[in-house]
Image (tube, rainbow, N blue to C red):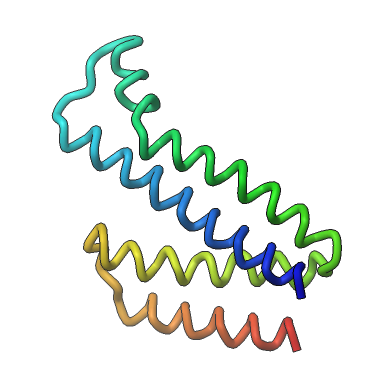
Amino acid sequence: MIAYIFLAIALVLNAAANILIKYSTTRTAAAGELAPGLAGLMQTYLNWPFLLGITCFGLNLLAYTQALKKLPLSMAYPMMITVGYLLILVVSWFIFQERLTMVKYIGAGLMLIGLWLLVR
């Protein structure tokens, strides 16, 4: 049971990391042209959403490692990818106003069916 908790924590952290890094790129793009050279790099990579995203990736790795101690990789990885993708899909629609097409809905449904078949 604890392994599933670690897996859930890992997939939420992974999704959060991706969302935060995307958010950090929209913030710097909204701020206008990036400064050249070192100033541009600092503007891109030394902001709180990006650094928090990197931290979430690191914590994700720790939680996922704990989950893999007890769960088979052939089950844990598909769960991580599928549920993480679905979280990102919903948040991207809500926060970034990314368009959800019928093809994306069908793909998400097929992913859920595939996940269900894998974990049975």
